[in-house]
Length: 288
Image (cartoon, rainbow, N blue to C red; front, top):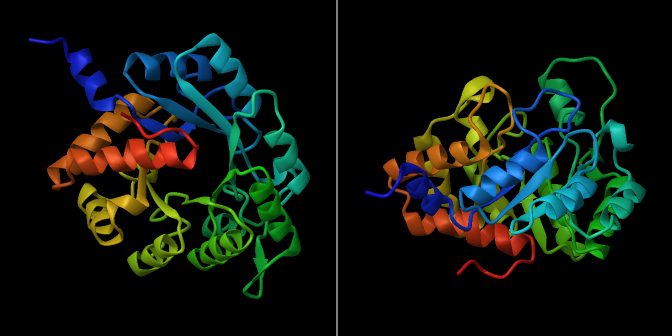
C-alpha cells in the first residue's frame, strides 16, 4: 500500500492555488512563503499566488523562486490604503519588479467601501465607483492592468461594482479576470450575478476559507450548487488559507476537493477548476 502522503500528493499534482496568504505579513500567518513553497512542492502542487492585503508580493515571489526552484510562484498587489488605494503607479511598479512574477491586482479588500460598511466601521475607505460609475482612478488602474497583461481580481467590492469592473476591464482589453470569493461577505454575489460575470469572461472564485473557521458562511452543497449553475469551466478553486487556526494550504485544498467530490463534483471538474483555469489565468501551458 502506498504511503498516505503519496496519495495526497497525487490528488494535488498540478494544482495552482491563486489565493495563498503567508508570512511575512503584518498579521499572524501559519507559515512563511519559503516554507509554504517547499510544502506545496512536496505535495505535488504546480504553483502559488502569494497574497498580502497590505503590501505587494512580487519581490517575495522572486526570492521564493530562487530558494525553492521547481514550483511556479507569483505575487501581486492589493489596492488597499497602504499602497495608496486606486494607485496605477503602484500597479506599474509591481509589474516591473525583477523577474516579472507580479501578476495579480486585487481591487481593494479590507479597505473597500463595501468591507468597511459590512464591518460597521467608521474609517477611511477605498472607493472604486460613485453613483454607479467607476471613478477615473479606477479606470486608470484597469488600463495599467491591461498594459502589463495582468490579472484583475475584483476584491471585496459589491456585486454591482464587480460587474462594472469586469465590463470596463473587457472594454480596455484585460483578458484575465477573477471575481474574488464571489459568495463570501461582503460581496455576496447571487448566482444570476455570477452567471453574468462569467458570461463577460470572468472566472468565479470559490475558496475553502468560506467553509470553515471564522469566515464560514456556506456548505459544500452551497458551493456545488453554484458551480453547477455557473459551470466549472467558469470557476476556480483556491484555498485562501494562511490563518493560524486553519489547515495548511495543501491540507485545506485536499479537504476542499474531497468535500466537493462528495456532492458529485467530479475529479475532471476539480482538475479544470484547480489546474487548467488557474494556469490559463497566469499564462502557463495547460497541465499535462
